Length: 424
Image (cartoon, rainbow, N blue to C red):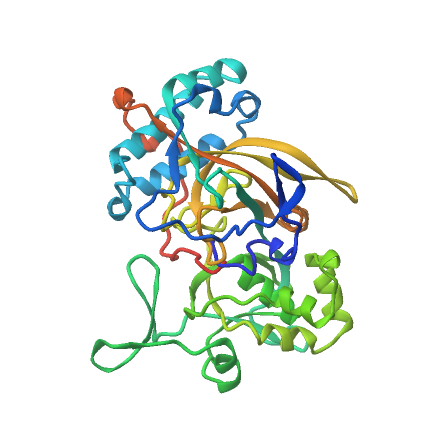
């Protein structure tokens, strides 16, 4: 959503998480650079040729809730002519990607489950693994979500802090990239930074909705969308429209450096509580991040960078410059489970669709998992910071005669004109 986050989801908060240990050197702590760029000319995915290296799909095949719907949303995207410009990906053509999703849809429609479904998937698909941040497949998984905040369409004594609409002079390319501020003769200049935008008054009159807390505004910027509960009880959705093209700078890192909070205290709730007890501090810290996000009213569920609705625990956000859009993936890591006031990390394997992007989600070593809507989803997102493996599945080349996509077989929401939410 898209996305461009502080650190993607709320785990932007856990900036100084411990480095991982290599299996061969348990006594030596090796801090990995999860944002290590992919070397020029290389692909982020490598086909697995040793069957022993293919992950076990069995457990994931017992839990396929909303997977069919998420597959349909990716197919809906690939049905759009504009999606063809992003293929081929290596030797994977647009037709191959779409056929792979159709094959998965057919398997899910067949009623197979558990071991039988896992065996069919293993027989039907080639499996590719992400090279990760270390060329050994290590990927850092973080989480993001859609918050729910109280707000108003008019400024009131309670609601003083606005989310803004996209300015008319801010121009994006066809792929959603920010071109800058429109100038004379078709030229573009860098759009103003957060500080310039908030102090110049140039955004006055383009307020979309008002919130009661400056840090809630910032969380909406980071997550790329939000649900707003109006005074009459109506719940509306605001989604990403554009950003000002500046790079994100972490305020969490600055808070730790300043001694405002310890790294082991950082959480979304901890930051909210800190700013509530230190009036004025939120705006001072937020001002240090030049990135600024603009919003628009949105219908239904939040949408990702494919302009398709995101699906809880089925949508992931990756670097769209190096990973194939809309494609079927499989992740293996530890993810948090919420039980009352307790949060436990549990082993998680599951099929997902690559349907989103994020400014902080760059390089092959990063992946963001969409956790859903509301406070519980926020708690899960805020406690997601784990290494794991990321795989992609493509129909074996000899099986490219899978049945054609039937759009009428899966109800899909009417398309909207919202642009990809690339603010994380």
